[in-house]
Length: 242
Image (cartoon, rainbow, N blue to C red; front, side):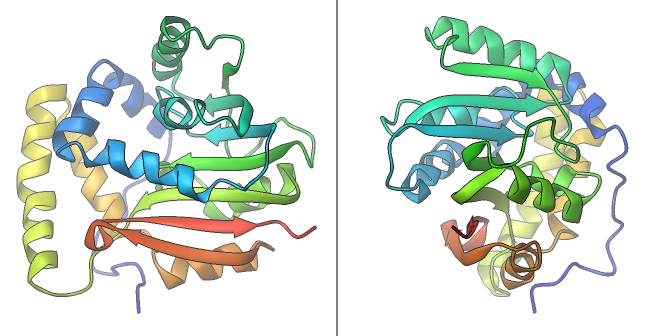
């Protein structure tokens, strides 16, 4: 059973956006460095989960510096994207990146809380959240909000860390995740807490079939799970009924 690890300390998500603002200046670099460049491949894989439609309106939750939007917006199916986050410094970087790419008209960044979306119901064709769902204050509330703002027939696409099956690879991965990654993250970012928080949240967050059950409970249909890189991360697809 892929349930949370009861023996692990579950870190507080209270004002976690302040932590991300502290590491905003090194956030993109560390994502590429600590994942050995795999984060780019994982985000690009999300494109394969897009609905086969054109003119898609996209909402990206916990958008950070907007990388998930920038890896998808070049796809002709997406017309417009909005990214929301509570971390103002991360959003500033996202806006600069949009301007540098000439995307300021098709990409918007707004301050917003995934637990209380300020959008009308049935607004978006796709709602994405990449490496952010485990950081929210109220998981059930966020899933309900995602469902609410999706149009009938819309799709939620969630990219998040998970854990490999129990085997030698998992033991090696957890050694890196617990011992090496926090030290590298601290060295580059200057924030010791942020990269201890990373491995603690991953190891205490529901994943795999357990997370799929939460999506079903929120009302989604056609829930699908796609593990990547031996289960280090997973893509979850969930549709809102017509």
